[in-house]
Length: 299
Image (cartoon, rainbow, N blue to C red):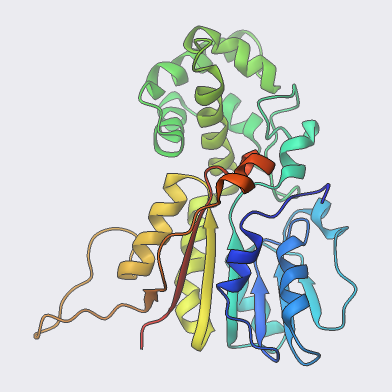
């Protein structure tokens, strides 16, 4: 697929244990690869709902009476399913990565490879862009973004350098930002450090971790008794949230035990962590950091 090559396609859809007449949700539609695979396994009475807030993805919509594309952020999953008369579903799939198309479209500003405007908005109607973050955030707030979301230990000096540079000239493009920070980008580590900086800005612009938390909190009430959750994450911040929520029902800390030492946890994991094999990574380099976790209700 030109738009996006779906990662762990068979494994993530297998994880849903699809029933032919079931109701399923693909909350990250993108190029539609996962959705098409789900539809191929559904019978004529099955239904699939998909979410995507990016207008670029809507052109990939599927002509199928069993399919509905909801043009919204998946943080609103329960609200929009209810609007369509759906209260319970048999499976939810989330592929949390940025699509190949978003990385490859220079004007979207997601990629360190192109000199595009610092945008990074997945929802192009949103007000906050990476350019706004870089040029208007106070030094301390900018340092926090780089440290918390990019896991950059030198976040304070990076933020100070950005704030100093923008006094002379607004930082508007990817390459301008790279030039401002070039003394912190040794050749051997340039790509890795830039990827961390861009990841931090993207997560801030799109509230990615807050969106993920809101989404996960709705899952226990949405799934049927045998329903499945299938989540592919691409960096440790996302994966830690998913893993911890499946294990504890929380995003930090441990659940409280009752008088008998038992804990009430809404989900339970199914199987072990799944990662792409060497062949998939060879064919699709963006699969190299993918991790698939599967869960169902803990009843």
